[in-house]
Image (cartoon, rainbow, N blue to C red; front, side, top):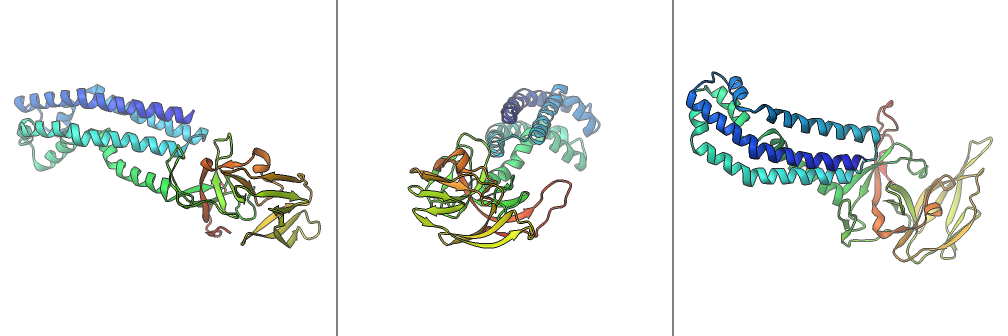
Length: 351
């Protein structure tokens, strides 16, 4: 729904801007020339009222309204794909900025060189000349905003797509390593560079390692998940009485604590996963059953550190390589809800 609204808004923006430049600019130039010849305007505001067609102002207001509608839909519905939104925004801003710079700006300069604007501006003091230049001599609002924001959008898109991207922890499946409300940073190049939205790998740099905390999309699900890599392609994974075995060898586990002390329901265990030490939780009240699985080529078996309260590969299967987003490596903020203040007590590297 949100993505559809975005596509519609972006398309309408392009169409409205093209109409503004092709028809609106011509009307403005014709009216401005008439004003220069008749010398009827006494100040910049009067000139603006005579030169700017009413439909031109309303077309810009229409675009602003549509963008507010789209932003509201993102906030209220919260099912938008931010990566797609950023790509579309950058693409639209780039088209408008490029056409305005290399096509329409030439026609505006030719008009100024013809003397029509220059002749009229001579009747105004310096302050009014600046106002006129801002109003008529440069770009129209949509193009002006596009040319201002395009470089920023392009840099943000490049950073989020190929360097690092922030995510929020949405569930308790990774407790105690990650808590609900943690904001994490995800390395986007350790596992290879991928095209935004499409996810196609374009540069092969490295592969996930056992013990990594990885962000990915589960099979047949558009929501991102954060779990730990347990099984690599070709591994045999067994889980017997809450003991994890990889290729026939038991993963080292050390009981750290039982909480609460008087009536313990949670076991806090330190697990050594191929040299990666981290904490996991076992819920003594829950038994999810044993299993044995062979990890398919090009796939990964994922599990949450909150072992008995995690929707992971035991539920929706193994994760194909093309669904990988990146490696989570640090917590940079904790903010559980808007009713609370952000906290930086949990800032640090992810174990």
